[in-house]
Length: 506
Image (cartoon, rainbow, N blue to C red; front, side, top):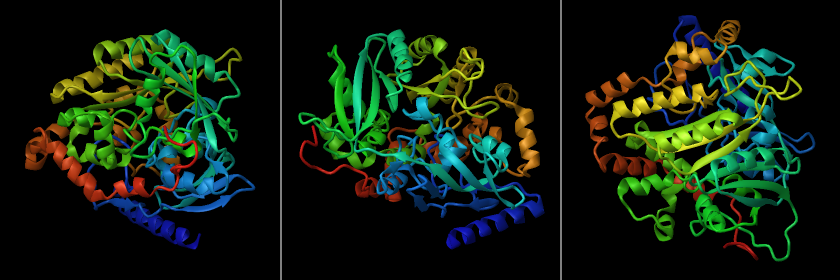
């Protein structure tokens, strides 16, 4: 803890320096799972990238003390040694604990536990004046609640205490085929009421074929059961495997997946976004090419290439949460307007209001509990022409608001400032900014907004940015920068992967 305290003291001193000079500053984390283009400048930046350790696991109390830049795979590897896991684990191994708290972290266990931050007991935060405080339900509770989802705009999170739950060896996954959009939505809603389940999500491959996946933690492996994994280059991509298993099935299909393999089942291929790389390069997409290029097709490498190539400016990566009652209309809209398939379905338990997470103020019969929401993951190519791409995003923002939903704030956000604050409680948020000396930090709107004019000017004024627009230069440059990052070694060397053994494999 001494090295942690020393690092936080240095961070606090940097913040105090900017506070005394009344200079705005930004926070550098070292990695990102946002699709927004960012430019890292050394001036007026507080670097917290070194805060990346799991400091303590208390197996008796079932808690983990972690620094904010601990990624999900390192966290799970550490907690599994104690037979424990976090209740909510984001599917991409590189998403960090701090990102899950400050952003919106939802996953297939979120119907049961809510967003990632709901399993955080307390956080250590450096305020905008350099003070170091603890925030929890009992100490600075307004800051604790407000900082979750505020994307670091209320202070710098430097330490988190996470709740843990008992781990088991496998997830018993059941694939329920559905043959229409209404059936898929109804099946997801139905399964969230099953108290024996630990995980629920779904994949819509088309209007006529979808799969609702339910999962239960278990140590029991039937004698005839086959163990399926997804982390090795020889393994199938999860979404393709589920599609193949269910395309003609009438009855539910059951598989047993090693726990960590389930948690990170979407890593290879980044759900299905990795298939777009093959489409971009006009390269064959088959089992052999996916095996051959496996190092490039894990999410860390895909993010590196997406940003370096400039393709994130033309790629729709949006998670959109909305009431179950309007989900069918929204999915029909995306099918007609974007033509993007598959879609991800993930039920979400809402957090209490006010909040910067997606929310909808509709309550259940008790008049107090907020109704769950359904997240729709919309990920695919948008229009290549920049103005049309922006226009389609703006159209999407209008439609989701019309249907009572909200976007997650990690991705492209084009709302004007007044539009943005029509969705959130600005008085509450600004009050927290003043109370906790956060006004020198960029506001949440300033952090998440995309400026199309600035993007266009940057592309026109930089030869390098201009060149990235031409096929295949952007893609080649993205591959080069991804290789230079060396992050393919992280996936290669991960210890969470299930190893070959009796009954494993396809």
